[in-house]
Length: 284
Ligand code: PRT
Ligand code: ZN
Image (cartoon, rainbow, N blue to C red):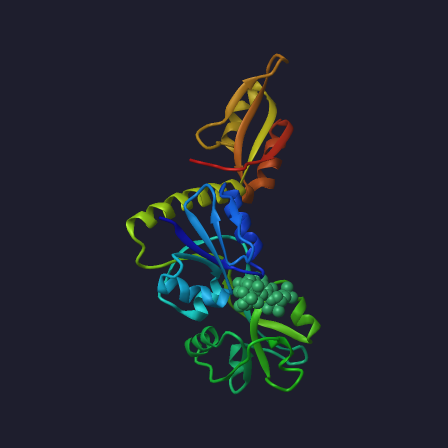
């Protein structure tokens, strides 16, 4: 039995989806036409599809799992489960107006015509905020709609914001944040559920490792207690004596988010020769 996973064939999520499987130690036998690939060392099969089709295929059980942007998941609104946020493909979906317009609040969208490729998410937002605007659905190049007189405003994906800027628009309200997510068919059999659990175990180990760093440092022995309180580690730090009398080497794990604060604190408490090393996998 194999778990079938649909990923984007060619687009912004393709490369990172493949990297995720590689980091999980899963290798593929890439077929010529690139419609399908079988893993050689794990019971999964990859189906390469357009991202727009993935929620439907997962809902129908043609694929058991899929990787799509949360924006596509919300827009398609199919009967699938959001299994896990994956941390790549991050973007937001925002309302934007021509630069010259003086914007006060979302009430300003009343009476406007808004172009978008995401009418479901937009209409849901407008209803929840009691805004009476017209939604004009177009399939691509949404950002040029105001300049060619097709709409007053747009609702689209924004990442760096440079596309808006070059089209004379400004982002005025972020409606949702999005990242790549793993979605799951609602009726997986037990055997497939077991494969999914072992895949999730690997994904979690990879994600956790990315958020943490291995740290090594030297410190005088009388500072050890203080330093341990700053870097408590997974269980507790490793302490090894240095050849120089009265000094030790301390090894631990620190979280990426608190990283710089911790380093400063360590230095202030006598740590020297601090080395920080990426962790490949982390299993608790
Ligand atoms: O062919 P297929 O239908 O599979 O692909 P697609 O063309 O529909 O999707 P694709 O590959 O463009 O994007 C796939 C997913 O990547 C999206 O559904 C989002 O979840 C995510 N993502 C992340 C983005 C962006 N960042 C992004 N910046 N999708 C699109 N963009 C566009 C944005 O619309 C803008 O026009 O990129 C442009 C540049 O953005 P700025 O703000 O950096 O200028
Ligand atoms: Zn698409």
